Image (tube, rainbow, N blue to C red; front, side, top):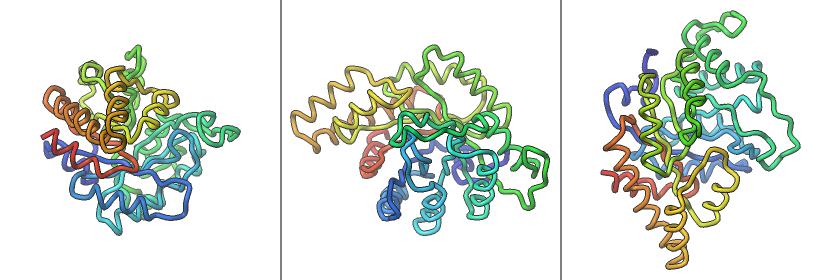
Length: 302
């Protein structure tokens, strides 16, 4: 087990049930919305993921907002990095920069294929797969060398997270993939969004033997449009018909305000159940663009 370098891992190691949030630096040079979102989440979450060109949409480099929210808002960042957009040289370069800027958490991701994003003609890199990327991070952090054994002076100290598809069916190949990464040096697992308690329980039972902290992902819906987009385009998402129906009925009943209230009920209750009935070490709340809902969900979860 690697030492806890980040506040996120220190709290998990201390036995606390943690919450994390998520921010998305979009296609802009302004950090205004990201910083406002971080300010809203501050005091409610221990760390905030900053997404790296999510679903292959080309946005601001996640390293800059990761650094700025730590510096200006005082909320720890989880710097997401995909292997889709960088070869091993660029990955190492960004890792060293992150270390110099005081980043303590990296979430190592494959990244969705470019064909699902807003620049579908872009050629994906995938010089390394995400498993080899975890290996690379472990070599740098734990041994102070890069993949070729070249010495890294004053190596950065990160805690390394990976993503898991909690909705995978069949689940076994996903578990084997996680096991390979865990053996290479993983500190925590963060799942994609789940909307079904039984699916979450099935996953948690399957990964129990890995003895690695799991943060279960929850992603409320800002609108019916967002719901439709996630169901249609986001890989690995499975939203039960009952949940979809509740959001759609709320929209017809009272528009945006009713959708918000329905989200608080659905996800607050789901969070409470997951907290009570699984061995998850925390929940990762992805309410991008409406971070104000996060404190209410946490409050309802108890």
